[in-house]
Length: 229
Image 1 (cartoon, rainbow, N blue to C red):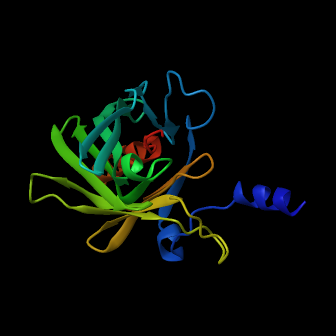
Image 2: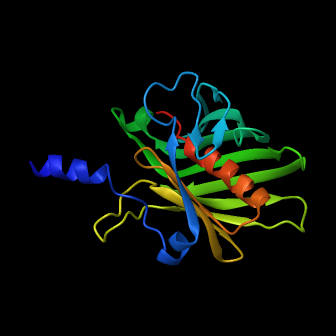
């Protein structure tokens, strides 16, 4: 019975967010992340993606003596609109690099250990209309991704993207990413929940072009999934 109660609680818990940010943000539930993902299309608010085109994950191994570096990587790409006008075209690559010590040849059996692991997510976001190109670069040691969304135009803002494992309530800290917190100049401007069906919060006083940009970023993060083992 306790396991059933815990499961039910886990399905309703939300990303832990600052109350001041929540008071000035619009919330949008997400569709398109659950169920059969063939011809997947993501949606929240008025925003909708085109069909998400995913590549099969590939695995490459570089072995030197008893050491191995394994890269498992995939990619996904999609168009994104606000329901009427094109917003952006996104092209993302993601994967995991793991370093192994392999002593099977000496010790036999399962003598192979992971000694280091690093995940990455890289996206190119081309904004329509303004024809601006943005780069999302994220990496991690272990479970947590962090990085930046930026443009080569130095006059434009840089957004810091931090993953979070914190859910509402002191007991809700989990061992996997629950969502992402987005900051500009130290001020939170958006949040993306990736547990359950997903959710998006965007500051409601931001200019339209910035809200559209943050919606594109949210779509990239909602569609990200770790490489399959």
